[in-house]
Amino acid sequence: MHCEKLYPSDWPALAEMAETSLQLLPFYATRSQSCGQLKKALYHQNKYSRVFGYAAHKRLMAAVHVVMKDGLLQVKNALVLDRPDNPLTRLSVFERELCLLAKNYRLSQLSFCIRDIDNRVNHFFAQRQYQQEQLANYRCFATRLSYRTGLVLGGGGARGAYQIGVWRALEELGISFEMVSGTSVGALNGGLILQGELDAAVKMWQDIDTQQILSFPSEKKAGVEALSPEGLVSAIQQLTVSAIRNVGVSTAPLQQLIADMMDQQKISRSGKDFFIVTTHIPDMKETVISLADTKESDLPLWLLASASFFPAMAAAKVDGEYYVDGGYRNNIPTDVLLAHGATEIIEVNVKGPGLTKPLRLPPDISYIQLESPWSLGTVLLFDGKRSDWNMKLGYFETMKRFERYAGKFYTFPLARFMQESQELTQSFVKFLDARYPLKESRLFHDDTLRAFRKLYGSRVVPETVVTVILELSAQLFDIDPTRVYTLQALLEELTSELSSHQEEHSTEGEMLYSLPEWTQQFIKQQLPISDKQLILDYCRFLQAEDESSVKGNVLSLLMDMSIANSYRALFLLFLLNQEDET
Image (cartoon, rainbow, N blue to C red):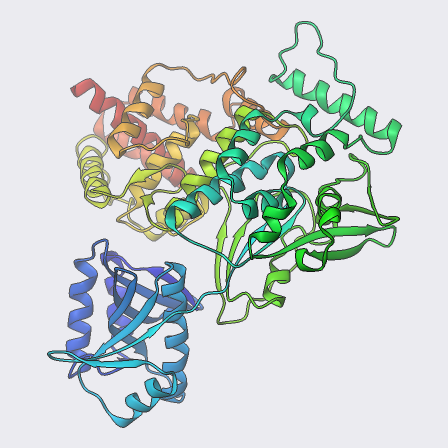
């Protein structure tokens, strides 16, 4: 089953489910009372009180009202679809799902507050060693949650700076882990993390450049900026030629960096299990090295072996055998930690090249995946400014995952976010009704929400669709995602970009971009078929039409072509209108 937060707009689906549902436990005297209280909770959610839905096969199967505060997840109400299975089996499944929900928010206790108790309920909780407490009008059954968390760090070369940002956020959140597995740069970062020296790791990534990792002749061409597309192509050419001539570029600088940065005794004293993934050649066999079974003097060699991206980099020799990058066989070694008893997984995927194994998670495993919706740049070419940018992304996106901030592509303070989002939605709808009236608004229709969900990569509902349009529009204009914005601040930033008519965004001199990123920039800025150019054309077209009836006909036609581009164009016109009014 899939768990997601419910909104007031989900009430019709919840009400339909409630007609054939029953109470998971006797929270209220009747199912009707339970349903009424669930609706009330749905419309009055806040940072502590939430309603979650569990869906399977696109059908809502259950709804749960919980309060999350002071490390406790308290289940206040729950309705489940009535099915012909054993009630105790159903209760067991949902107790497990609620344990996972609590663990996904890193809470320490789970409790159920029940008004009417029978022998069945008593027996169920007694079997699971819940503690009982009689309160005023109900009895509370509570249990402490135990954790054995594994941190998984995937391979990805220069993109690995993102993982240090994740580490910084986990430190601030007080989230600990008992074991670490890493492939390639993930293994190197794993060693830094186990040493516990965050500031040193941040500085290393901020100061890094390619020559600190790989040794190859690098000549700067006259008149060519190092961070330009031409400079990037030149660096790739020189790296490729050196790799071909030498059967892999020398990793001597990386060996020295490992020697300078890694303190083997500190890693060993961390008390955490550490697993390094590399690939034995020529049989291309996955090799998992455990810190506990490794000679202290061999640890730097295994770290080097895990990160030796052959044939671009030379193979590493350990005890007379040759090894290359672990990504050839297991780029995201989640299975390694599951095999060693992890009950919670925090997986950091920086989307490096390599083999990602199919993963079938046991049903009782808490699984949190952290990966950026933004491109993280090149793999083999390193740049300190890009590393700093990636670290900030890793930090903010981890903080958002644990709901210290809101947003997906951009980062917003939680305080007043929902209220400001509601006010923005109301202002946009008012603008549409006044300037671009349609016989029937399609902003909140299912086809519109589906179109934006495809672009956004997450669930979009009527309550969030306008802030989603704002984020996607800001992304279109390349507004910096490594800052915290209020909704108003991002609106102003986007308005400034739009009103200045700077359709070409220069990135030269900022940081190192990958070839796909440069290609995307060219398409966005130069080709008439790009979404950005189409949306700007929609804006000009709609601005040129004065007659209301003509506007409506034109807009209906544009929406039939692309409803997402049409609403993004309307949103940009809304911003320009607000600027004119001020």
